[in-house]
Image (cartoon, rainbow, N blue to C red; front, top):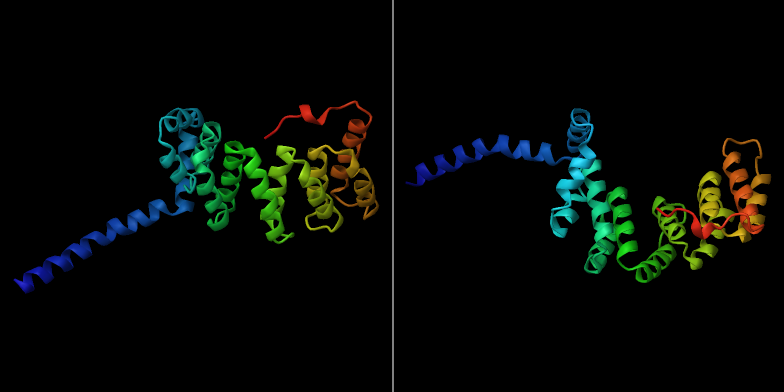
Length: 227
């Protein structure tokens, strides 16, 4: 009986290897992305169809899809979760921001907590800025969320970011423009003096022109579209 059991176990293990490999390949994100792109090609209306199908999924299922390698699927899941604005997701999304190895997933989570509890989210983002390396993508991504929220307390961080060139000049100018505070004009004008002929100078000019119009009362930044 022992011999038979060992033989059976060995056969079972050998037979299960192809299924195990197939599972790993299917769940490997680049493969999921490739399959998703192929499905996009086959169905030009896939985004709409996916949205209709995922709208019916539970919140837990949508949270699990944030990690999916098919970017259209994970992006739609994130959008639906934002729209649901479930306050119970806050702590879980904070955990993803702090532990996920995927920058995309971390950004999904930032967007979700922004809409679940804006006051609490703003405090979390501001506290996070104090811990993150200023030259990191996470720092600039967090700043961008605060800019989109038009969070007043983010202004000093934006100015510091621009003055110290933690990001490239184009990114700094874009953030200051989107924030819409004319107090940033002296910083932008100083940025313009640095290598005025460089490729990113147009973004600085654009930010200066926009904020000048805000200062003159020609544009109301509070009415600009938020993302």
